[in-house]
Image (cartoon, rainbow, N blue to C red; front, side):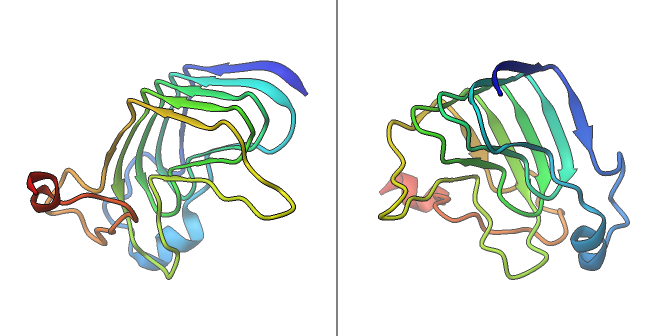
Length: 150
């Protein structure tokens, strides 16, 4: 599959999860968009909320831009497709409900499967913007205000 554009979609598990407990997050939260094969896939201006995993772009030369991922319990963005671009996305409100190490963005490589040419540009990743949010997670690589000031 190649040269596909998915644009301006809204995806969610449920519209209101204020009553969800940790078990609900683990059993009811759906994953968002997964592109596991192909090339030149564009994911643009999509809104995903109240989900487990946000956008997984493993196709080569993917373009993931201007998306919003809000209230998630896994990784918000994953990218392992060579020469893919992740730009101008907004990620916020991580829910820590299991032993997963949650990431705003994650990529990985192995000796047999290196990843080349990933670009991260002007993404905003906010651990949580609500001090009352239950199950507030701590994203890996998140800077605190104190760390930024140093």
